Image (cartoon, rainbow, N blue to C red; front, side):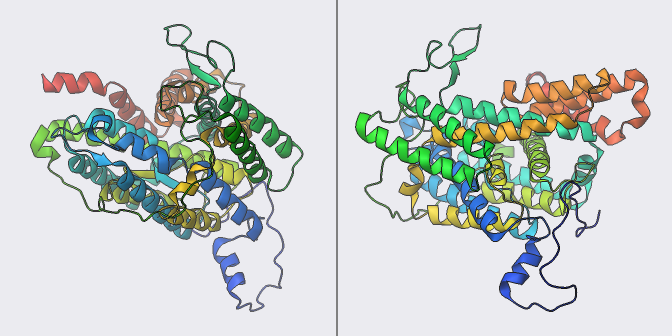
Length: 502
């Protein structure tokens, strides 16, 4: 695939403003050509708005990642095997730093509007399953090794070969599955869908089957406002809707003083209450940068450490692949095979995100599905990423400002974006059941297991088995078979670890 090949087939490129061959030395024109803004049917205004909306919907990670990885004291932090823990403020600083650096790097190199930040799946895995066996620096060393492996696979072309081996129908299914996943995340983050606390049904509407909290009501109001604006095709619909709903939330919080939930008050705001900050500027503490050790192999043994790396690589590799597929389709930059421009560069930079995230103790940085909000606002190029990245860098100094938009408002935007992505289902061929079952499993397993990688794995395994026994074996790439076998190992890694450890 040519790095400069144009991959949009649905939207014709607008005619250039100047005749071919006419010199235009202006900075604005050079930026336009480099990011292919006009070629992709976008404008500077759309890219800036899209970058801003992506930041707004991703900014919660600066608050949430420190709560997962760190704490304000040892008794409420994820403590490692020797009693070490990560201070909340330091994690917040490196979270914003790495998100800003990697988002800008990806935008400048891959020139696509995919924001980067600490991946929620991997940071939770580190806090819950890894640091009970190793120290935090050793855990981050495993993340760095995971990133180096991904960079190696991408730079040798292996990752791109696997990407190309995935059938178009599965790539569309991945987009649809991510749409449902995004919507489900929004519904859960808003409190509209909650755990029932019993085996069946495992989830329910609101609290005891009723929407009773003010924050959830704000989510519903935001969903209606955003839905109407998008349906009426209002320019900057998502940005206007987010700002308007946030202002309403600030006023309601000032009147009713609901406060954050802190995991105890079901009627409180999920993560941060929408209040105007008393201070604006805070100096970042970047002490965690470089706090990495590769001693995990000595502490727990080569086999146990290797299994942890295997889990990190598989999760990182296929979560990112699925997210990129979905976002590229939504942005209209994917070709008829589901591939997009500068694929190899994008995959390499994504691997670098894991290395940088581990080296800074922010956890592996990867593509964020919330970028779909910026795409929904009109972002089509890497210029939007430059905007998002600069805002993340600014967030290191203006952390209080990132807490104004409550998670419930961002959740409403995610549901809207999820609905947009699910519309891709119209391109799936439902005439053959050997396609229907793998596609269905890909779509449904993602939200129900809260994992993009799990959905991809279920779809891959079903595809190679059902299609093969339906007489379609010759159409299946050997690489897809190899990946399916890898997913089988991934899905049963628990018993394998126990067996080898016995």
